[in-house]
Length: 559
Image (tube, rainbow, N blue to C red; front, side):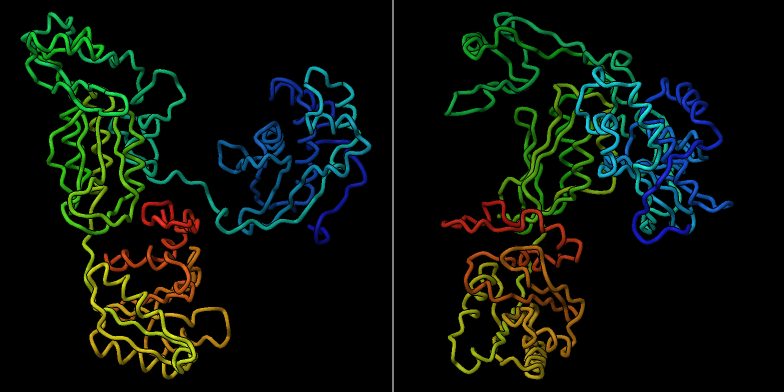
């Protein structure tokens, strides 16, 4: 390719498109595409232009930046197709196509440039949809496209990003345990169709609902008067608007004469009652909830309660940090017919607090759907409560102005109050000037006194005079993660020295009641000091609203 850096303007329209004359290409396009779409004709000129910049003998791939018409031009004029994976469609909504060397990623991008459309008003009308299709002058449009060809396009040298190089492999293939069909194992424990993503109406589990008899098991329904002496098939809820919502009748409860009037006041003029010999292909909502709750609940979670209105509520068996395997929870909830709702992950909970709940959506759940939901949970529980370890804390304040007494220290009482709220005793405190050697020595001194969590304060800004991080490094502190996408607290530092965790708290903690320290401290105490990737996720919800009356943690901050 001999292109100058940047874009080149073409000064003429090619008289041919690949192996075709223009008229032959238009006829071939009509056969391939169904009709000679203007976008396909223009795409032919663009692909022909791109190919002219690829040296003979080079194996190339293609990218189309629109899903409309242009991919068909690539498939007509090159060996690249969607099926063989050499043509990839990144639907950016741009009328542009690229061809590039399979091995080096270097090639050219041809794109329609709006600045070059002034001589071609009908092309502009078509591209910008300035007129409805029925009002466009199709004949004039084709004439302008034949005249303009690729001269309305820029041609730019490109180099593909490394992550987009290489083949488009399917990865491991598995047989879906629900429908039995082959699917990419990376999609999860069942295929995407069985997870409810099928585009077909009435389709579940890879089969038509009618084949499965999706109307449900045979149920017996009687009038409220006829229900006397019968057992209720499910909990029946009574709602008093603004006052209460609870099960007025429980599953298996024998209904008597006195219940008839109450049922009718609730709007229950017909009642489903138990019947022997239910089809074994169905699972009652209560039984499904018990099984799912036991599989969802991990350490520190009690799910032993009885179902209420078809739902099992899980509670914390101990105080600690509530943790959720979010990807597994999402996959579980993608199975049609089941659900689990939880508190926010990384919430600090007290023993006895409700943390999650699960249930089947229908009264009776198909057993094969139940099996799909349980396969998602084969890798282990989804929710747990981790205990917060009561660590011996050392607080190191850095700052010459504080060391010399020019400014009263407020960090030690602030940090002490926060760690003591989690039962962590303050084992050592120290104030040192902004001196690298003094900081390193102070850290080593605290480690010698058995500190299990070291909290350093101040000296973490971008000011070149702030040497706290250098002193920490001198004392053996490693794995520093400096900077978090949390406000206030962007310049927070996380690290460790051996088994001792280190948290560097920036000066904003002197002014703001709630900062990144309040979000990160419980995770560190639970043995879950965040990785760089974990910290990156905290940017979503990491902006404190600085409310006049702070209600943290009962607010969106850090969630």
